[in-house]
Image 1 (tube, rainbow, N blue to C red):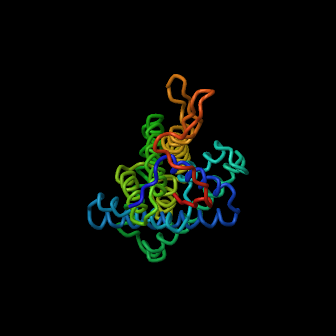
Image 2: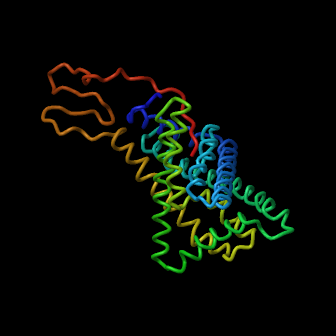
Image 3: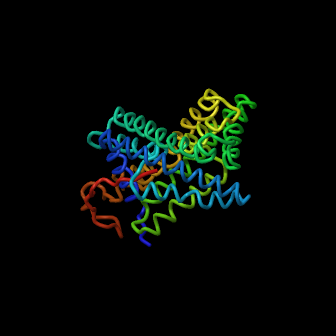
Length: 308
């Protein structure tokens, strides 16, 4: 399988962030709608597998199928653009502004919610025969998830809120790792494996993913679960979004960008290193030469479009 080295990987991440900021409103929104919808279907699938088999691990192993599908079709998730879009602004790409980053985040949030809520309504109909019967066993399980992960946090007060935010941080650390790992390979199999592993980890560990929750909690409310819309917003969705932003940007996007895109100068007397470059420069008065083993610079191609 092909492998993309970290320095080139960061360039791809910045290219992807720039392409998202400059994307049209229509395309950004529609891709986000489909991203939220497909991930919601995957969440419904994983809960169904877990309930019907009694094996939560099996549900976690199979859940990444949704993430893989939406990524390969170039759709977007808020958790992914949290990580990628700011890098284009930091890199001073043409057209990449703070306003552009916020616009992208807002459109993707709205699109993800629209797609996830659509699937929540469709699955509620599916679980209740058009609201004519009590929810199925899977429907009851979804309702319990919504209750436990809203009221359950609220019962612990600020300690519960802290736990919720931390779970959101840990979640997007893994989800954004999946987004980036898909760009670390040019082969189909390499992309799938790179995405599958961290997504499986986050789902089984019960970390909080803002888009998955856009399906689970509205579904629970539609199915009559014992929590309110206010509980959902204050004791899950809003803190989860904050945690997802911190986790993806801090532990994945900025870490890779700083260490491989804008590397610090080596502590070698008489030798300096160009910022963000692998080229070494000799002291003044001596001819410069490329670092041993370094490859000639490659032109940056078309912006890379990624999901996640």
